[in-house]
Amino acid sequence: MLGPRAALDGTGEAAAPGVGGIALLRTVLFAALCVQVGEVFAGFLARRVEASARPAAWPAGEQPRRWSPYAPWAGFAAALGLASVVASGNLVPDSLAALDIGGLYGTRDGTLALVEVNAFLVAALCARSRRPGTALLPLAAVAVAEALRAHPPTEDAPIVGSGLTLVHLACAALWVGGLLYVLRTTHAWRTRAPEAGAALLGLYARVAAVLLAAITATGVCSTLRRMPTSTVLDQLTTTAYGRTLLAKVLLVVVVAVLALVARFRLRGARDRTRAYVPARAEVVVLGIVVAVSAALTALPLPIRWT
Image (spheres, one colour):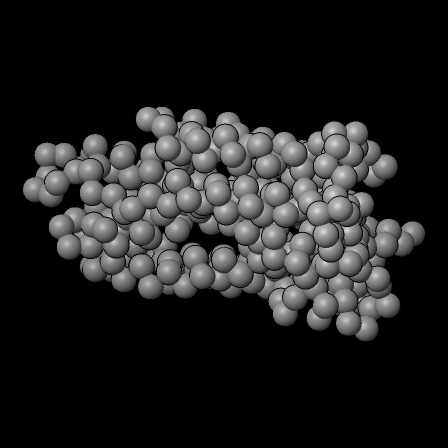
């Protein structure tokens, strides 16, 4: 949780140069993906609640300020930074002369890096169009590229690993980004439509339960593919990857508890807006989970002990 260097301390493992910077860039990339995907997803839920509330005595159409026109530019900058690392032979470039831009087209990692750069650029243009929901297509390309990058062809059954990572990343983006936009919407509705805000949070919570189940299942399967059952307990404390994974699991447990508290308050309390407090804490912890997940991608993979 304190960064790649802290996770590596005492493990005897060697990390790639610039591991901290790479983790930071991936944090920005994942956050940009979550914000834009979540805005499209939660915006759809908000429109459903608005439609069911009519003809209520509050004006429909009140939505928070959109962040999607700006988020993909942050993702574009992060993807460009990661592409520059690939272009310099997976080393942190110290000058423009160290970059081999043309070489990106000749390698698998370079091609995937270019896909992410171009996909965020297209997503930024879609966000400014009349149909911002079309940004889901280029953002899906980012998720696919990340899933393929995480599982090189030298891995056993890489297509299975990529599939698990794709589902895991897609569900996480919907969960984190969706909750962020839902809470921003409930804040916008707090004075004129507080009950509609609670209804929106309840609708999101039902979908989030399915997303959490999918994230848990794919996360467990991915862990067992990289750490055989007999070695999991040892590697969770003796490897940087295991330590970071353990921190992520503990944070997700905290998130799940906060989500349950919010769900109980939505069901039982007279004032359902009391559910906003644990939900806000949940989105903060989820932001930390995104950063920990990004650090996980920058650390050396665990050893498959037999």
